[in-house]
Length: 115
Length: 113
Image (cartoon, rainbow over all chains, first blue to last red; front, side, top):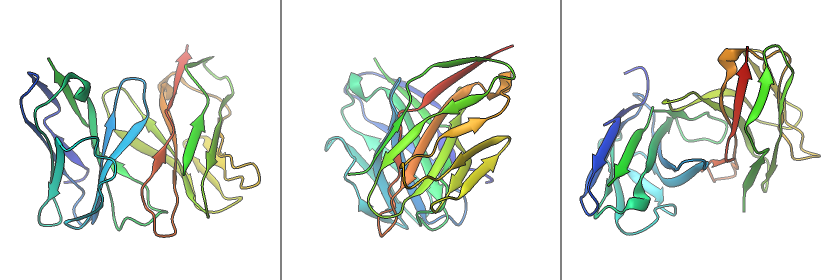
């Protein structure tokens, strides 16, 4: 597609359930990033993929969070045993090669609400 | 570590007023600097960028100059419009083998007719 696509756009679930968030980057982009945006906060880096590898997982807040990328394209972010503090907008971005002078292309995000 | 500091918002202006949103950074080496804009319900969009000292990025009437001596990248626009109302994020990517961006907390701009 023309841009980064994320699904679902909204997700409401009960505390303790698992959720999967999907990101489809721009075709041909090798670098993919996940961020969390909480109300009134900036963007919190979660994880970065170069191809299918994740050289930097330093931002994942706990072992309940995991992510994978297959075929150098689609990525899924999984949150197990969700907690209320996981409620946030989860943003995905991609860049062509991941070099520092390249801008990030963002999806519209998934708004996650934990009841 | 790397950090980006933006002025607190919201910034409230009347249409056609002059806009400045301050951004200062801390980074080792020579980072690339970016301004992104986020409209309600959407992801961030690149507004402009500068990749080396004294470069000026510009787009849609917005400008920012990469000032290494003051470690700043302030966003300016000479005459704002109601349609400029959004949240603006300053960001850096350090380079030198590290490609993880650091974002500021965002500054909300509200422009009244």
